[in-house]
Amino acid sequence: MRALLHRLSAALPGQCALCHAWPTRPICPACTARFAQPRPRCDLCALPLPAGVARCGACIKDPPPLDQCLAVVAYAYPWSGLIARYKFGPSPGWSAALARLMRDGPGVAAALDAADLLLPLPLSTQRLRERGFNQALELARQLTPGKTRADLLLRLRDTPAQSSLPLERRLRNVQDAFGLAAGAERALRGRRLVLVDDVMTSGATLHAAARLLRTAGADHVTGLVLARTE
Ligand SMILES: [Zn+2]
Ligand SMILES: [Zn+2]
Image 1 (cartoon, rainbow, N blue to C red):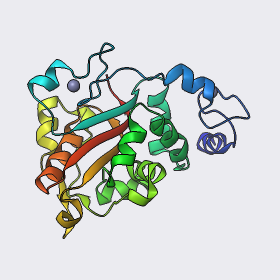
Image 2 (tube, protein in one colour):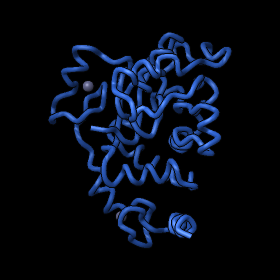
Image 3 (cartoon, protein in one colour):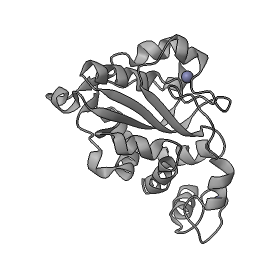
């Protein structure tokens, strides 16, 4: 019964998911203004920084394998709850509202315009079967359908939930998690790529994918996520 009610309320058209205002967008303008204020972030790891600073000390000292990293909101209230509902719920229809939020983030439209290809972070076959859809692919398709390619970057093996592991194990955990489809190098060489995911935590997963794409000859790799832990 609860699951049914949940599904019905998730399907109510024209209601804001956060404040339940009605009728409005799935995430209303007032909630967007209140909870999705743009803030200055490091251009290589997307952690918040004081205004006027482009890059954090950690990235200056040890630059990550991304040329640019964009995150739109903090993975915290109310977005964490909404994203969990979107990821595990029966409603991939949320992708349009969340993608709109992403596109409005600082620097995102420019990165999408400049990109040759958008690559969603892939899920393993098993996880895709459990979940029914890949949330990263849904977001990428909403952002730029004509540039989205889900057939080049592959998830070779499942990795334990990143959040349950200490950082050092997370890094080892993702090292061989990705592979390239046969012939993918031809499509990737010399290209500007945007890697799309819903949530970034340590960045280990994005970095592992970015390293592989660089090895394949990608010219420029941007990481783009909806939410980032801070
Ligand atoms: Zn609202
Ligand atoms: Zn940084």
